[in-house]
Amino acid sequence: MTLRRGALPRAALAVLFVAALGSGACRRQAPPEPPRRVVLVSVDTLVPTHLGCYGYDRQTSPRLDAVANAGVVFERATSPAPWTLPAHASMLTGLYPSHHGLRDHDVTLPESIATLASVLSSHGFATAAVVNSHNLSPLFGLERGFHQFEYVKEEVARREPSRGITDRAIEWLGQHHDERFFLFLHTYDVHSDYSSLPEYERQFVRPYTGPADGTTAQMIRARTGRLTLDRTDARHLIDLYDAGIRQYDDELGRLLDALGDDPRTLLIVTSDHGEEFGEHGGFLHGRTQFEEVVRIPLIVRGPGAPPGLRVGTTVSLIDVMPTILAAVGVPAPGPLDGVDLAPTWRGAAAAIGERTLFHEADHNNAEPDVTRAVRHDHEKLHFDRLSGATMLFDLATDPGEQTDVSRGRPELVEAFRADLEEFAKKHAATGGSSVTLTPEQIERLKSLGYVR
Image (cartoon, rainbow, N blue to C red):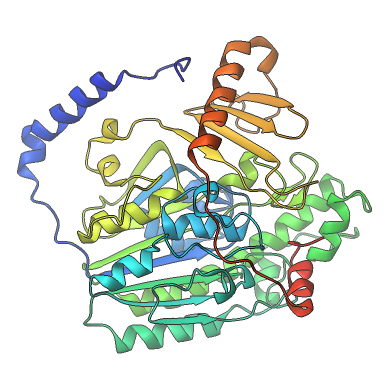
C-alpha cells in the first residue's frame, strides 16, 4: 500500500536505524543482561482507558500503575481478534488468527506451529501456566510446551477475586525461583459478569435504580435487541466493571509482592481484547473490530526497559512472543507475523515504524470471521466480507470512530481493500485436528457469551 500519510520509504527507515545504532549514546549503553525469569500476565477483557496509567481519572489500578511507571507503556497496543481464543493464540504464537488457525471452537492448534512455551522449554526454561478460561483449556492445544498447565474453571457469577490462581502462581514461583522460567497467568476477574466484593463496589458504584445488573446473560439480550439499555444503564455497567478492575489490581499486587524486585525478571501485563459499553450500540465483545474492543493495554517492565517511557507506535499482541524471545536470547522458531518491540524503547523505533496491522476472527455474527479491519498509523478501515460494506476512520481526529470518511477518500479505501486481499492470500491456516464440544462445554461457552 502506498497512500499513507507520514510514511517513510524503507531506505529512509534504514538510514535512521543505522544512524541510531551508530550514535555515541547507543555505544555507551551496555546491553542489559538477558532476563532469567519471564512472567506474562493476561487480564481478560481489560480496557486500557479504564486504567490510571492510560489516563483514567478513577483510581482503579494503583498497583498496575506502579508497574507502568517502572517500565514501558505502549499507548496504542491492539489485538488481532476481538475475543479470547484467537487473541490468546496470537499472543502465544506470534501469528495472526488466519495463520495459526484458531478462529473458532472447531479445531486445535496445528502441530506444526510452535508456541512461546514450547520454544522456551526446548531452550531449558521451566514453563508453567495457570489459566481461567475454557477458551484456553487443553482442548485447543495452547497448553503445548508447558511443563505444568492448570485450567481453573471460570465462574460466571463469581464475586470474589481469583485468589486460587495467584496462590498457585506464588507456590510455583517459590519452587522455581532460582531457575530460568516462563510463567503465564490468565484471569477472568474483569470479564463479565461484572461483580466484585462490596468493599470494591462501594468505591465505584454510584446510586442507580435501572435494570442493568452486569450479568453476561442480560448483556447478550441487550446486544441482540431483546433488551434496551441506555446511557445511564451503561454508566452503571461501567461502575461495576471499574470495581472489578480495582479488585483485581489488589490481587495483582499479591503476585507483584511475590515476584519482588529481582532485576532478572521480565514482566509483561496485557489483555486479549477490550469491552463494549454501548459506544456503537453493542455490549460485551467479539462481534466488531472497533477500538473499544481491539485496543488493549501492554506494559513491559524488566531488563533494558526504561522506566516511565511511553511508546506511541501502534503495536499488536502478535509482537509479544518475538519480544520475549529476543529479550532472553532465544531465536524464533521460524517466520513470525509479529516483531521484537525492544527497538522502540532503545531509541530505534524507526526500525519498526508504523506497520500495516490487521484485525479478524470475530464470532457470533452471521458467520465466523465476518468483520475485519486494517490500519496504518491513525487510519483504519473496517470491512464486512459478506456485505462488502466499508467504513474508514481517522483515529487521530476521531478516536471513537464516529465519523466514516470513506466517501471522501476512495483511493485510500481501495488501497486498504487491496491490503486485506493480499493478507487473506498470504495467511492461510492449515488447521489442526477437529474439535467436538460436549453439551457441558457448549453450555459453558453459552453462559460466557461465546456460543449462540
